[in-house]
Image 1 (cartoon, rainbow, N blue to C red):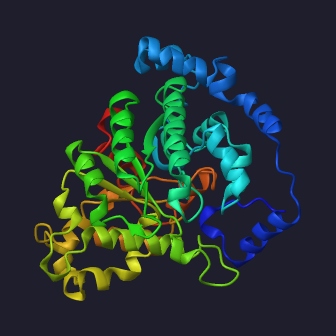
Image 2: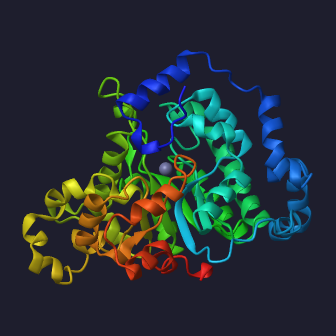
Image 3: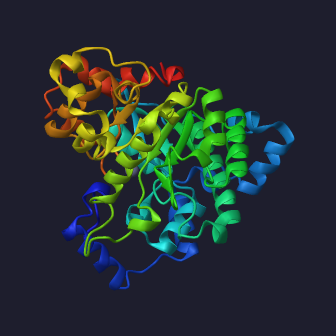
Length: 401
Ligand SMILES: [Zn+2]
């Protein structure tokens, strides 16, 4: 079976390859093999020679910040000249990866060989100084009935976030963390926000565009968004295929249509002020939203979202009305993952301005280098590229300046 190289290209051909992989009885690594492979490079259980239990005991004794500092030396300086900040970069704790390999939803293959050290090598090859790690879809629960997985999801979110914090500590300056939340459980998510920001010093949260039958922007999520707004949080979002839409088209991976569409659906959920209602984006002005994949199908829907009158050249040259849909679209950020072509990024630049575009490469579903090369084809000036590579992200992540 050919390894899938690109999360966003699980089209017909790759979809078949994916099925090949599922049907050919490709050997699934045993837990022992898995941990054995992982231990060649893994930082948590091997390099530091400290088990998670030992580490948590140390956390209890001396506090997380001290435990993090003591858990490992600086192990990977960024190469000279590395300056890119990668806001779309996935990671997995050993426990999460084990679940992913068992469940085998889209894109599981890439995590068979995942280690933080491999991620560092890919970052070094592409001039990335810091990657902000996030959990890819389907997040921390894997079926369509959250109630069945609630406790496991809460526990797995904590495991992922602590693992991400350990990566930040052991590769100082090389990783940031967009913490995963066990949504749609509101109370557990509020507890995880507090722990992630106050104890683990996360850089933001990484949300999915939807959870079961609830999309971002749904009023049931307000307690979480109110807290994120209070904290002026960076809210990075990543698409998934919702319960309704795993396989609407035959022989088609949800990565082909659904993920991009779910992104645009979530964006509209957040800016929706239909009937004179107050949009969630207006309710929560302090949240710095970052959308994946250049906003997904946002570009194809912009006429519907803001109306043609707002897209005329003279209208686009004006400052949008306060709290209008276009106002919010122009304060959001969008990453470049799976979108480094002149058509998408050229149109996105016209809609929101190049200052809202941030570098993201979807590791380990891509090599990162291919995104650096792809950006060269778009027609951006050197100054615009500097902004996309680093400066634009620093506006919302200033501690990496
Ligand atoms: Zn991704």
